[in-house]
Length: 453
Image (cartoon, rainbow, N blue to C red):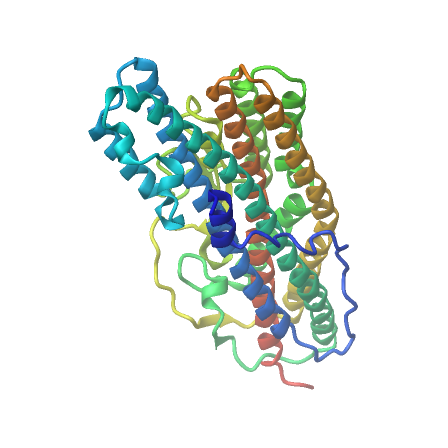
């Protein structure tokens, strides 16, 4: 069985990406005031889990491909030295290959048998054959990565379909709560009540004041507008467009790495500016290979971290891996937060403010559909550009393996950059909707404290 078939069988890639071309439709929403969003929210969380699993599989494939690339580089170095590969070196190389592709039962697909290295005359041929085998495996890995990316984006699309079900329902509920608050009179029975919303709304492990919740939700709304429908919404795509333009112009990709890095740095600068992630934060040792800035602490103890690689002298894919944005805990170390806490009872006016913010956040999420459609187009452009560039290198019989390596490096980086954009945006949407849902629940529970007059 070929290595490609072994990869396909292991990763179940034969039917990946099915149904990804369907038009995303915003569903009709029933107008019943009592309708809840709980069921849709659960489905959204399940879809998020699927996205995380596909992203993990993509990361594993890229790591294996890069490790195999390092093995090939080592074998090329031995061949260039003119010294025959010893049996001991062959055993080490075979062990290295086993650590990378052993799970696919594919060691023999990477290295010829140990007996082939027994004599000096046979060793040179065995080394060449092994390098050819690994070269073919790298091509198979590349195709598997592209196929896995399609699976990942199909999972993200499925997740966004769930979001397009959740957001309009949450908006409809916020409108109903706002109307109820507008019709509510009287005085609240209590000034503070115990609510099980602390994990979703806390700041520094404590329940914020009413004004603190409104201020925090205002921040979520502002960032949502910029990330989902504003300038920074296209930060990842703009960088990818610039890189693809340089690639299509032709020439040595390795020599153009500096241009690619500048495109990523421009994207990071936009994200940093528009999210307000300009502080040092409490990053701790989470990103040792990156320079990181952070927003201030947001509701739920979260923050946006924006990072740029410290060392841009290595592979472009490595620079991208250590650059981008993410939604994470604000604290350097995980802290246990109680599920419930004492919250101020909101005034009816504050409940209406929260409802307005929830409605606005939902509108931003729904408006993201336009960007998602264009993101599909960008992914198609990257895929086409990658196939053209790789075909061009493979067609050139004089092309050295380092040219093929540079091509794979660039497109691994571009795909990684776009994938970071999809992951970051989806994580932000999930956070924004969860926070909006919790804030709306806070408003509802507060209204329950008012006596009718």
